[in-house]
Image 1 (spheres, rainbow, N blue to C red):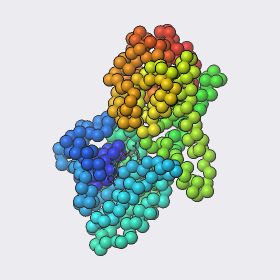
Image 2: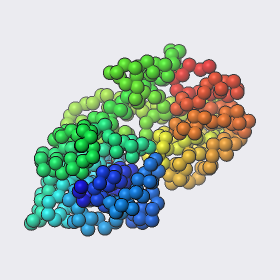
Image 3: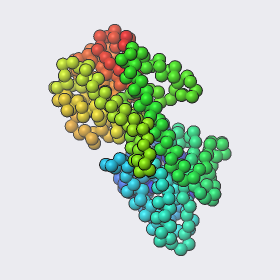
Image 4: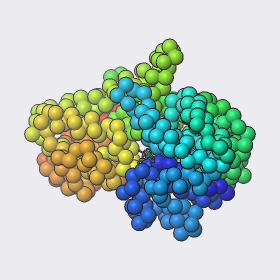
Length: 437
Ligand code: NAD
């Protein structure tokens, strides 16, 4: 059991803090956003993540989980400090590291005794070395540290499960002492022989980028196959199922869609691309995945325009699903943003509904209409677009929708609606790469 501070209480920091307290550690979740901390102290969860609520309550009650905005004291009182602040994309494509380095300086000011300094944020390869140098500079007496890179692989929407039952844990460090401390931090998993991989810092940093980029590449690949299926008369659903049965390929991440979004894939691809440029290495596969994804988002807008042949001007369009994927309130880089911008640019009106993400999207689009359920959103709409694969959209009452919509156009960018039913009800529909019925 260790005393741990997690700095940054966002999607990753909060889940990590809660997960590590569930493993028996004493955890302080620290953030500069005082409103967030006040909410957490009051028992409110600032993000939507299935299962998070009850596990937070349990660990707070057991005194293993605290929230604070007093970052310096929490650093002083912990043996392990985990950095989990954001590393968003900067205008030039690289990761914006200002939040990480501001935390590193705060750690430097508050080093006392021995600490393991661990980065969980996704950071460019070579960051560990830079952080170590900053911390070594102006080294205080009686203080010592070892550095660890411990990238995170959780997926929003199933983050709690992913954290508690990970496929692998990467501990990148040159220090055996720090490695043992981290094994202790993850002790219940270690005992269960969950695969802990001990690597160098740079290797750990690379594993994260290489993994995310590969998954993004796989999505772009199946999206392109889907687009070609439409032109050659093949069905991408059957193609993906058959491909997935090949163990070398696997069925995961073979679902065509409106282009990937979220806070990770787009920025991590751009960041790895910048790193490879810096080293004079041209990574053509990365560039292709990025370009294909941008095209896919545009392709969805073209599909809508081709479907509603009379044009979008003055038309009411229902957009179902705003988050970048199901089971999260996160709208960062969501394809819905491109779609909404497109509809507005063509003079249409957006009637938006998401089971969880209406609020997050209203920060970006305060002037479109938001509804509390599907049927209010589609009421008198000329067209309906499914943008996110929420479970509730898989079982829509299409009969009712046909009656209350004023038009008959449906664009299913997730291939979750029943084509037979759509046809029999007289909808004019489109989806991604399917043979129409
Ligand atoms: P986030 O934006 O949800 O949270 C970041 C938090 O850091 C915010 O609460 C912010 O207030 C806080 N913060 C910023 N500066 C701070 C400072 N100086 N001191 C204390 N707190 C500070 O970000 P996130 O989605 O949790 O991502 C965090 C990192 O984890 C990123 O590098 C991301 O790439 C990586 N990651 C994210 C996911 C994911 O699914 N979201 C998965 C794996 C890895």
